Image: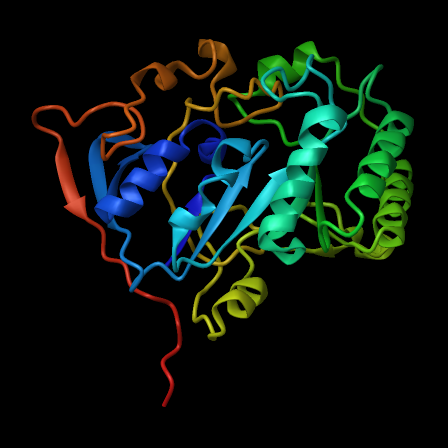
Length: 308
């Protein structure tokens, strides 16, 4: 199985103690987001975990402890945008702090294992296409030689982020202008030695040289593991998503990055309300198992093709 750590929250930034403790214990619990009284126990044995995919805006708390991952193959999806503290209030200064963190991580584990995400992209009176083009170009130049791939996407509106996005007074742009913008930042990426792909985009960006990518990427995982991976498309993701199947270990309403566009925290309810229940020694990321709750062992297995 592939572990997704995590689409729902920033575990490397805020909860790496918990995750590394769970690796030592060999299992963790995850609540069903659709039924909180159902809990899955997931084995973390290296025999069944083929690869770990980390999602983060700031892996600094984890960089000094990567050796604790031992024999687990892994890579990082590292989001680094041009937004300021008005949009990403919990993320340190990009130029002074986050770019050096990205560079340090790439130096430690190799640039092929650090994927740069410039997403989601939205436009308003401050964050215009011109602004994004300039910010993207500056970051791409700073990350030249530190990554091989850049992932982009345009913002999607969900129930959890709709109110906050409306407050940002987003402005839509014509498809032609959007394609021209995407083509421009693709050229910036390529000039700095990076391939650009898009993530779950409804608009076909292939016409401006940007193919659909996969965040849980079979090709990269096979390269890291040295084995063929037999896995299908992740049916829990959107139709346009190219990811292969994975097991998600995060919890909604726990991320403290404060991103105004986030779909994983409920802006209508004040944000990361579950974070106060965090216990690094609990099998659950946040909270405890309550009386009467059902725990079921999830059936998991390696996806590696056995040699014949």
